[in-house]
Length: 160
Image 1 (cartoon, rainbow, N blue to C red):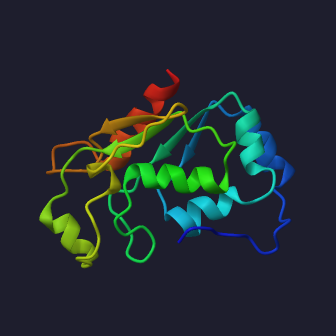
Image 2: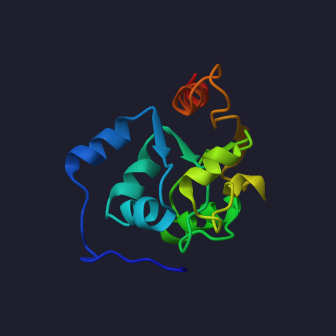
């Protein structure tokens, strides 16, 4: 997939959403389906501009696994470039990438061998406008913190 468009093309963001984005301290993009969730939302008129006007730190959280038919073979850099193609003015300050290897049971849960164990295992997305951050966010074993706890701590560190 190279390009996505929104129908109707002039769909506008609600004023409340624009106001919340402009006042935010942290804006988290993802995890989610690259094109059908993340890019689709960023095509709404006024949202990328509101994020760009905000003083918030913008963090892209990479999925743990790629998605068949949508992000097959994509690296983390490919994800960032896809977002930039659709919302070029959107700032992305940090990109969080899981560093914890997925257990076979976690991969088997999806029962889709065509999935890759995450775009972060390949090229980390970096550019003049974003920094790749590798974080252990996948859960391994029962005694470790859950993914959401680890992700929460990593996000809070971005604004502390």
